[in-house]
Image 1 (spheres, helix red, strand yellow):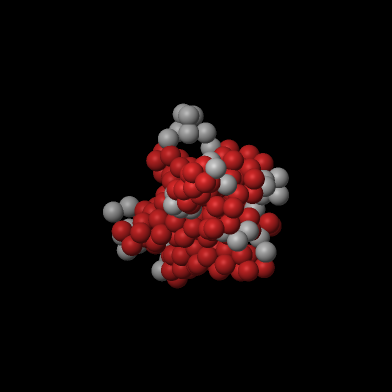
Image 2 (tube, rainbow, N blue to C red; image 1 turned 60 degrees about the horizontal axis):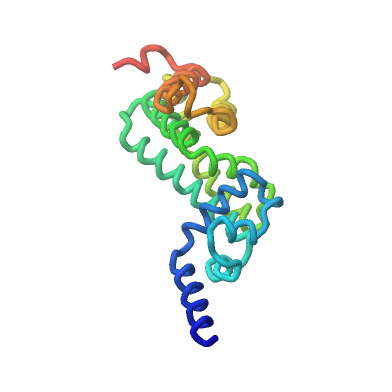
Length: 211
């Protein structure tokens, strides 16, 4: 009996040492299929092949799991778009194309977490919502700043830069709800198409998109 208990404790500790990765991966699958409110900690534990108690070793609650997924998701998107912006040319049209391209690529390649980010903000508590809204605002400012500069330099003609930025971001967000990676259009091709659409929304002068 003592030997069996020792083996059981060793098994639990071994599963705990797997870290957060399997728990988060299971939560993403379950939130995508069942929704946040339709998923229990037992569901997450079962699909992660861990005990419910071991999840609480990493996360105090299911709410904390959701917050980590959404905060990490937005942090990854911001990192990808910021890197694209830094690597782009000086022209606002080049920078906007780079931003949109990176944003679209991420949302076509990471559809599950993108869907959670788009649909489950309503499930966050006040603390989680504040964290996520702060990160969303940071992403929004990247688009706002590029479009504002394009308007001020005469490269973009839109009279509604704020609305244009929101339209571009919302247009790209929605990709995760319908894009099929097995379809005829690759993620790279979709990114190129959306960059063209974005330049149309801001009223980019043809000359500003040429070398």
